[in-house]
Amino acid sequence: SPGASPSASPGHSPSPSPTGRPGSSPSPSPSASQPQLTAKLSVAVSVLGLLKLGVATVVDVQVSDVGQAPTKALTVTLALPPGISLSSAGSAGWSCGQGAGGSTSCSGGSLGAGAASTVSFHVLVISLSACGEEIVATAVSGSLTASGQSPADCPL
Image 1 (cartoon, rainbow, N blue to C red):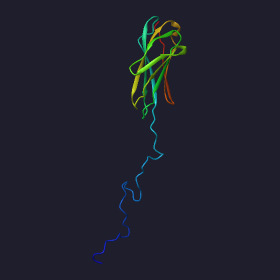
Image 2: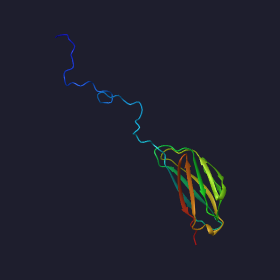
Image 3: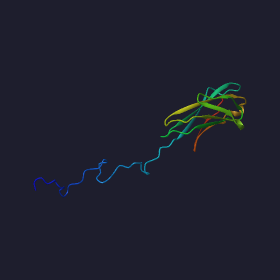
Image 4: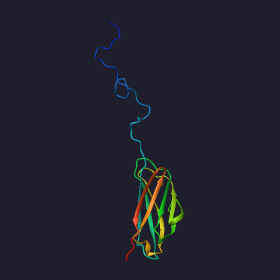
């Protein structure tokens, strides 16, 4: 009849919702099936220069966050083999102190995803017994742990 409002014809679907699917509504929170972003630590140990008896050199420890989320505060511990002593440690943003058994720990802030930070350890070879042993660094951030090592190679 004229003047009557139009009615939906059979086969006509209702207007799509904002998600583009009829009858669905947007989710206010992410679903549990989405992967959780996490931080992941990587540690690289580099001896800068030669390890020679009575000669000071530097051991750099680079900690990287190779994950998709920031880390929590970091602690890096360097374990030196007998025959190598620590002279000093530290870098901007790191606070270091000597521990028991030839280890030294440094505390630093957190790292953003994809970021890296390096802490330097100044060492001195006091005995050739250290040659061939491993220099080991461990980084800890919350429940995350990673280690790296470098041989204490001494030239003959």
